[in-house]
Length: 74
Image 1 (cartoon, rainbow, N blue to C red):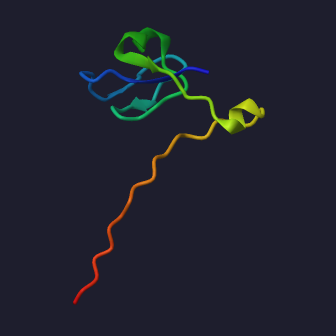
Image 2 (image 1 turned 120 degrees about the vertical axis):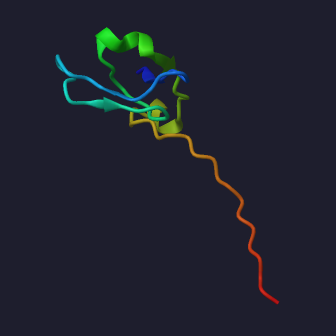
Protein backbone atom coordinates (compact mmCIF):
# COMPACT_ATOMS: atom_id res chain seq x y z
CA UNK A 1 0.00 0.00 0.00
CA UNK A 2 1.30 3.43 -0.88
CA UNK A 3 1.59 6.29 1.56
CA UNK A 4 1.74 10.00 0.80
CA UNK A 5 3.08 13.16 2.37
CA UNK A 6 2.97 16.78 1.30
CA UNK A 7 5.87 17.91 -0.85
CA UNK A 8 8.53 19.96 0.95
CA UNK A 9 7.29 23.26 -0.52
CA UNK A 10 3.54 22.66 0.04
CA UNK A 11 1.58 24.43 2.78
CA UNK A 12 -1.21 22.97 4.93
CA UNK A 13 -4.66 22.96 3.36
CA UNK A 14 -8.21 21.82 4.07
CA UNK A 15 -10.33 20.17 1.38
CA UNK A 16 -13.65 21.98 0.87
CA UNK A 17 -15.58 19.61 -1.41
CA UNK A 18 -15.90 15.98 -2.42
CA UNK A 19 -15.28 12.82 -0.45
CA UNK A 20 -12.38 14.40 1.49
CA UNK A 21 -14.28 17.58 2.46
CA UNK A 22 -13.26 18.93 5.87
CA UNK A 23 -9.99 16.96 6.03
CA UNK A 24 -6.85 19.00 6.71
CA UNK A 25 -3.47 17.96 5.34
CA UNK A 26 -0.27 19.15 7.04
CA UNK A 27 3.45 18.90 6.18
CA UNK A 28 5.31 16.12 7.99
CA UNK A 29 2.27 13.85 8.29
CA UNK A 30 1.91 10.61 6.33
CA UNK A 31 -1.48 9.80 4.77
CA UNK A 32 -2.82 6.53 3.36
CA UNK A 33 -5.26 8.34 1.05
CA UNK A 34 -5.19 11.76 -0.57
CA UNK A 35 -7.79 13.60 -2.61
CA UNK A 36 -7.31 12.84 -6.32
CA UNK A 37 -7.79 16.50 -7.29
CA UNK A 38 -4.88 17.49 -4.97
CA UNK A 39 -2.55 14.59 -5.86
CA UNK A 40 0.05 17.00 -7.32
CA UNK A 41 0.72 18.46 -3.85
CA UNK A 42 1.88 15.10 -2.49
CA UNK A 43 4.80 12.77 -2.98
CA UNK A 44 4.48 9.01 -2.69
CA UNK A 45 6.66 7.44 -0.06
CA UNK A 46 7.65 3.81 0.01
CA UNK A 47 6.95 1.87 3.18
CA UNK A 48 9.58 -0.63 4.26
CA UNK A 49 8.21 -4.14 4.67
CA UNK A 50 8.37 -5.47 8.20
CA UNK A 51 8.14 -8.94 9.72
CA UNK A 52 4.52 -8.28 10.68
CA UNK A 53 3.65 -7.34 7.10
CA UNK A 54 5.21 -10.52 5.74
CA UNK A 55 3.16 -12.51 8.25
CA UNK A 56 -0.04 -10.88 7.06
CA UNK A 57 -0.33 -8.38 9.92
CA UNK A 58 -0.31 -4.60 9.61
CA UNK A 59 3.06 -2.98 9.01
CA UNK A 60 4.41 -1.13 12.02
CA UNK A 61 6.18 2.18 11.50
CA UNK A 62 9.96 2.01 11.73
CA UNK A 63 11.19 3.83 14.79
CA UNK A 64 14.85 4.32 15.51
CA UNK A 65 15.88 4.22 19.12
CA UNK A 66 17.82 7.17 20.44
CA UNK A 67 20.56 6.87 23.01
CA UNK A 68 19.92 9.17 25.91
CA UNK A 69 22.83 10.29 28.03
CA UNK A 70 22.33 10.19 31.76
CA UNK A 71 24.18 12.90 33.63
CA UNK A 72 24.57 12.41 37.33
CA UNK A 73 24.87 15.42 39.59
CA UNK A 74 28.01 15.47 41.72
